[in-house]
Length: 114
Length: 113
Image 1 (cartoon, rainbow over the protein chains, first blue to last red):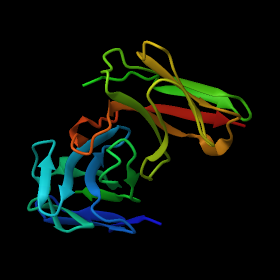
Image 2: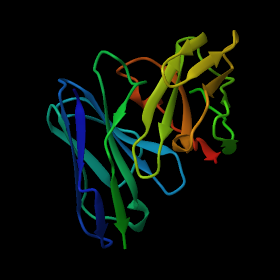
Image 3: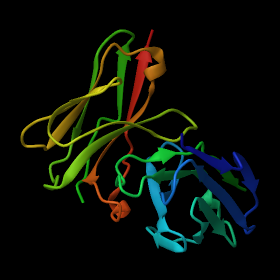
């Protein structure tokens, strides 16, 4: 069966510090991968998605970036965090041939920027 | 992009059937309707998906009228553990169109004892 991992689970960082969140998927090949952010009490905002190694599409202009160095690894990064980067970050995957409608989400990372 | 409108919140009691309606007046011909459930501090979980008429699985039913401008998620005999946020999404099934996946604010369902 497929599983998706995210770490760390929680993170408290000062403004201006760098960020690296990692997501890995097991049990499937060539997945579509996604990064979402959820602000408190709000819906999910799609940040990035990837259909293959090295292929990243950005949905929202921001100081965040994403990379996919391996087929089942997706990394969210920032060089300098802003207060507005606080939120709940979720990684998700979907089968390459199944489309985007059914996505499987990881446990998330709670980021607090102080 | 088809915009969706859902009630912000709903209350129900244990054992009752709950119906959450989503409006999507601008749904396109190739759009599907998908519902997700999210518990606090967890990622959303896929519940059900449909194109027209009725779809039923072990968790819920999805009713879609002929004009497809709305849909209703039906949860039979809810329990306290069904308290969660429910999201309605509309968009095409296409691996290359992830940009069209939009989660709104969802509906906060609270099940009371």
